Image 1 (cartoon, each protein chain N blue to C red):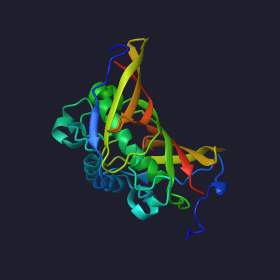
Image 2: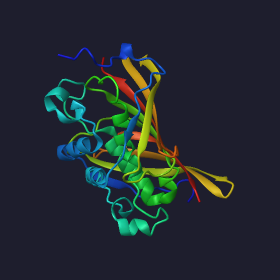
Image 3: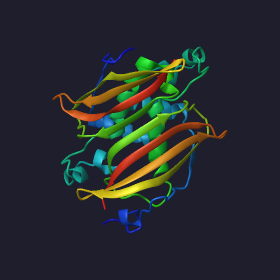
Image 4: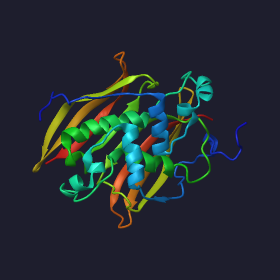
Length: 132
Length: 145
């Protein structure tokens, strides 16, 4: 685990059906995600995925990598830059930007992102976690 | 036509608290969430596997925090339609578990206008019945009206 290490990415295809499943599972029925007519009249001109759906992909990537450490002390901070639309393929990725010894533990800070199939950044942010 | 009894930007005050959300996540909720995010890690879904882990039983995906924070924003006056998520911060202190009673308290910690947009920052803390900290969430939301 060192600065510059790349995280193993997680890639998923987002569909309107998956957005509807996420709405049911999370209880977030904002019409921006579900009602095409409503969404057409917003700046997005169509339905978009919940931002937190893509955040789940980042957290899955971090759990795959850091396991229990992430589940019991992970921290993330992200900004939503562009909408994810039905039909988009989202890849969560990242790299280690800092690795500091804190007593017997290591604090690992990563730059993380989600990118769509066009290579556009849809989310950027950082994660930090104390690792045993 | 918009319902007049909705929580509009001008009605929001910094420090305003939402009534606490007291809830539990059931295995059915977790399975629905796993299917939605396509994350079938056995720690969240397979009891036998999870029993052999250091958690000694099933735990929930950390980002099921979304279920708690989204619903903790809805315990008071209904929110207007079309809120846009601008930023999110999570701190996962310890995993939540199926059927664990969880109390989530949300409050407005900031509101501001920038480039013609209205922003509201809502922070929520989830604890269990023993008052152990589980998740802290800070959501920056763009308010439609």
